[in-house]
Length: 164
Length: 165
Image (cartoon, rainbow over all chains, first blue to last red; front, top):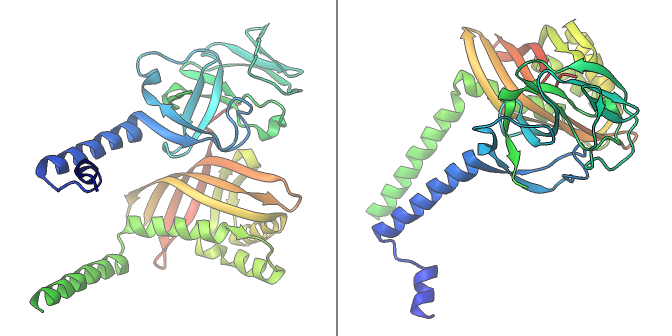
């Protein structure tokens, strides 16, 4: 074997090498564990934007300095961050939200939602989003409303946004 | 020979330490084991005879106090439920599903007083119904547990409404 290849695949355990491995491991743990966490989308509630089984990363610094705005896709923690909801922000605190024959209305105005592809027949009476909360809905409105988890949640539960 | 004896002695010490650790769990590990056992008990893998279903349902007493308080508005289930009712409910639920997998994530356990525990977790329920419909439920849970006869039993279960319509 070529000496350079041998040195690459079978490096000698010098202190510098061990230190480099430890540094890379610590940086990878911090980055992928606390800043940019990998996840698989499970379920159909965000289809077709995020398909069941698709892979992505949660970019956690996304809302460190600014709150989410309407149209953002966010991740919401439950008891912890190993399982999160993936939903789209459709209304902010103080907004009035309702669905009429599948069309989303915010503050009485219909909202153009190009990310919603399938037919929708949802009807939901108007309700106001509480202070400190945002209103979240998945993109898949073809599923029955009863089977779709959506509603308002505290801004404190938002842990980031998908990287793409 | 001396080196070999040292290695064997070290292995023996490690095994002994692991055995002590396993045989005498802390109360937090006891609760964690109970949730693991609950997930295993609630799961179902394929067809199950009526007798096996009854037997499984009867084992509810291993996990739930009598009565157990439920606060699950999403399932119209609120109030104190007796062990007998839980057994009936479990039997009926198992009859409606073909496959079921229950997993707990992010389990956090606190002990507010001796003999009581408070746990929070995310529960993920996946499977298929007898009709072939997919089951995919995720909830945040808050649970109170009490220790009775050396076993941690669920005395209160609350489904947290993370998304409020």
